[in-house]
Length: 428
Image (cartoon, rainbow, N blue to C red; front, side, top):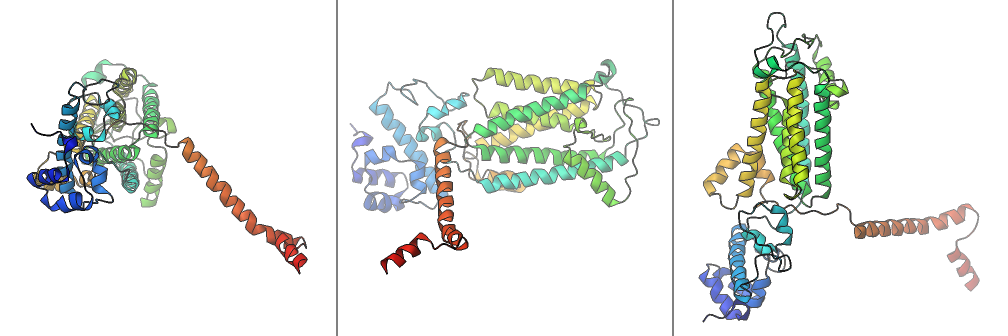
């Protein structure tokens, strides 16, 4: 009968590495660091990446870590076959397709990898900043395109509203569009709260910014290609003579500064295909439900109701055709799911798929280069008590040091010698 992994000696570990195709690391792991079976059971991906091991080849790190996960799981099953995967105290069983993603907090790192969750996640703040700049650039382009399409809006007398099943049967509600924007603001505040407490907030920020930027960039193209007639006779839309380029840029800046919201006084026409308000509502709803625990059913139901009612109010205000709203919801939801499907299955994709992804989805390839698996829903406060104490201590120490440096100068201004000088005089 084979000995348990915990009882392996260094030579048995050497044979295991050689049989698995990792003979080039036997000197590092066995000769230099004397790893035995018990050490293998405690090894993590972080140990492989960082000092003192510091394996440089990413593919070898992933393959060796996968073999270690399998070995460690087998060792756990032999040691205590009745204990389910995860925390023994919780007695919760997990499978690779488990939808209870928030419970990953209870699972050790080596078992997370087997469940498909990403490990050793880095915040990569520079990528988050770059994604913000990308979104800001796209919103500015959108604002300028809205100025252009307003000049091209068809004449309402010559081109009346197009037939629409929903708009033709629902009366116009003047205040509905303002309520829709208040709903969007509510969803935005909820999303800001999620980002505040989520452990991997910087990954979420760059995903949200890149997806929103891409959808709105596509919207700029569709707005420019075709100009639809005004969807309601209550709208007073006519081409405006903005004048030269400088005047158009000023108007675009006004739209951009007020986020294109009618409650902020922004009025524009011609930006119908497709609905930007529906994009914002749907994207916020999907991100909130994806990155919050499944057990918070009330929150998920609430955000979905806000999304549905927000879309209803857009149509009730007769600000968009039904097709505008439908296409906006379809494109936003499909792009969200395609992005996350690719991100969550990067480990299983083939090299040909990676090359194709770099060509067609360059932003995705760059932002998700170091995320190999599903991002777990883990939460923490952005500022801890220990951090506040350390920051306060450093600030007090810095202020005290500056005060010590200024004390001799203040004494000289007052015509007094500093204490050190008086002591030297007394000694003489």
